[in-house]
Length: 401
Image 1 (spheres, helix red, strand yellow):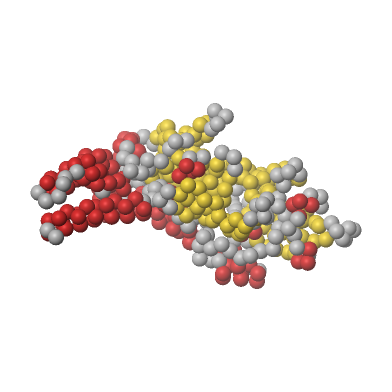
Image 2: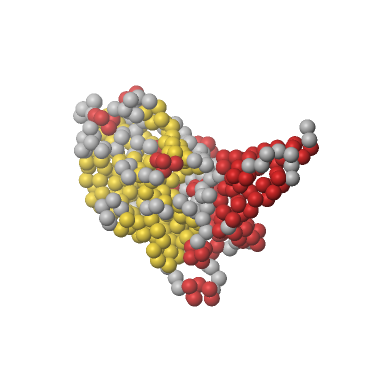
């Protein structure tokens, strides 16, 4: 076989292989930063909580423990492909749900954005150049391949070669380059989101990164309603601002009645407004009190519906379960948990006994990183003057507040 023909076939194969590998390994440059972090994805009709894992055409939220749905199927994760990802309104990464290791990892990421080295700056400039001139570069490579092929003894196909050239730089398809956003990297911005009821929500923080589909705003402060499922012990262990102690026991007066006692301790530096405990089916126990920093409160429930207690193993009662952040754990049982689960948030934790299916509703001010689809939100305002920004160096510490 003619050596020019072999070279032509090899050239086409290498180009197609290179393009295919890039397509398969390509992840959104915003979402890939969330890999291994605990997040809450807010969809139009529900919230999904889990350890984030990104793929080129999908994301997965891995639950902290297996769940059983109404059809008695065991569920360990929630998978969303590209079409369903369009229903995501926002993704939250709350700082008080991160382990010390992941908190440090987050700070290192922000430091690299706020104070990029020469390699990172050069890489970003190169990527922005490829994005801005992607079409021209692809056509140029295609024309070059076509010209090379014309000098070889095989029939030319200009359209196919130009398509191959365009595919060789297709890794930039999910990227974006916008001069105004480049100026605000690591600086304060205000993101505006319009909800289905035509109301507007704003998030103020530091622009960390953006792509064609997503943008990340870090260091936001949210004062909003939080809903914490008390049935997920592993999730309660991740709450750095609240310590929990759950007790389940039979009533002395009625041996068939289960008494649920919940003790809460505010370990943060801000007041928490406790609203109520509900089961989602109409039951509601009002609390309506403010829990100041360092204070504790004990809540006793004697009237929980049987549906909320259906999974409780009566043979394990009475049950006393302290659920404390691993780095603060002092009891023997908590220390065992700490030794087994101190690596990262992605560790799925210890298998705890079943707890009542109820939810704690409360208000608090929480630090959070917000990941917004660009189809649902846009950067509406800058948070600092351009002239003033150019006269000073970025304060790296401000991003980690």
